[in-house]
Length: 347
Image (cartoon, rainbow, N blue to C red; front, side, top):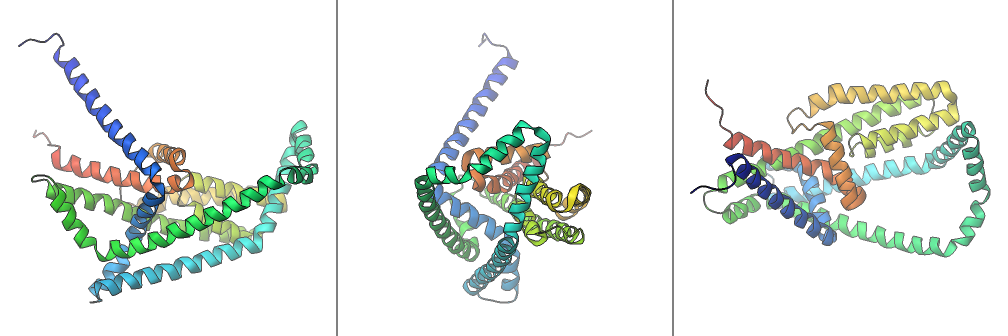
């Protein structure tokens, strides 16, 4: 039976249908995640936490610790570590926060002096600050109440995520068995392999990012302390937190450090601070990333930036944090499928 369309056109049409179906399913999935974000966010955060804590849990199992006890000890350890780190970071930011903010304001004033009218506008904004605050006092009060509700929601999600980490660690074997039982036909082995590859990519990303964030923060803090830049510890804390958002977080935290150095120590020290930040970024890009994350899914920087932008547009800061590890998981699944179904032609 002959058709009016040639073979290449029919193949193109078939691929277009496949792409439209995939995009449609993805769009529905994103819509469901956004609609039920209060439930979905703790699950995704728990997956990241499980990936990060998996090595400790498995080490406890090898030491013949009972599964529930091992999961409980792992969660207790993460509460202690996260609590300690949060205390150190918060204390550093509280102790040096005023100094950093004052330095940033001074830097903004110094930069504005080079732009004439822009500087006048900044001065006008500063002089009218009290009037603006008085005019919008009610809005600010409602904003405080909204902020308190957001804090309560974040705490609830964090507690739920911690409980989910406990169950994910303890019942990981049961989850894999359930996944195999739900797999259609003879696809259980393929589904299990894809799940292992995706989770391995997330695990490697989280472990490598944490190590790289610590090294970056340590190097930049030491450099700023040598340069006697005020608030060096707080700026190092910002670098550590920002490192979980690849490229963009390092750029923003580094820019803050350079501006603080410019305001308090002058142009020459600011150049030295910029040199420290750039040296750490070169160290990360050419040594730390290839060595530490060499066994995980490697993604082009353009893909990472697009993933971060898409995550920010969908879910704000949480989306930026989750976008890259989820993209790494997707790349891991594609790599597993390519390895299984791509046949290498014989010469």
